[in-house]
Length: 281
Image 1 (cartoon, one colour):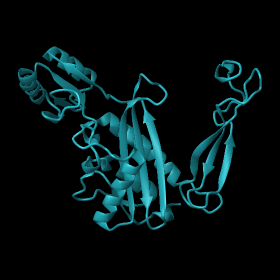
Image 2 (spheres, rainbow, N blue to C red; image 1 turned 120 degrees about the horizontal axis):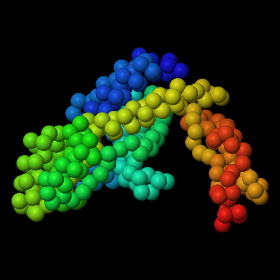
Image 3 (cartoon, rainbow, N blue to C red; image 1 turned 90 degrees about the vertical axis):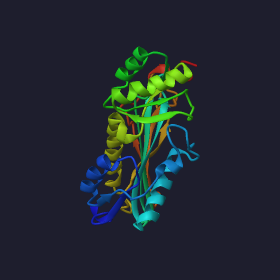
């Protein structure tokens, strides 16, 4: 499988130092030389702090990052990530880091994408009126190893200070905002280079991408064979009717579309009646 990628140059499409995590893993596993592109400004596609709104969905944004980096370098192999932060998709009151990682191989007309959703995040924000409130938030946000952002109010960009990593930056900035506005809004800086916890999630996504890139289609040997869907229908242990729980995982080739199913992905052959629409409507 390494022969698909070995000896090639791969551009890591980032301006936030994600190559420090991605490059060593991908370089060793796929036999490529990874470099960040000079002059790539991914903030043009959207910023976490709202000065530029992201107009594309996360996968399309990662794809556009790759395309910009490929255009800058003239290479044909790129990787990019795009993160989103908010409530976990199923644990609704738990904050989550949702990372998309995409590998584009123009030489073979191939895209391999993975998603890593993690509750391991310090993502948070709060309006603070006193230094004690500010410092309490900072401690919970793992400051100063994780940077903070201050602004005059939530969602405002009039007065915005990013990348705060020391108390001698944090307190004077807060005092200036508090003197003018009576309070300030403090939030975690989610840019990868300022957030070691996010870097760990990107690392997990990278390992997942490597695994998929090293998995060949059983039919045509194209890399990237992996789970693309689930087939529901796991039978209820009481009534035997099919539930919405996964009966099988569906694996599909990105190139020839060969598909196969792997039944009982969670190792169970019946579902708890709690999740049956008939027994527990």
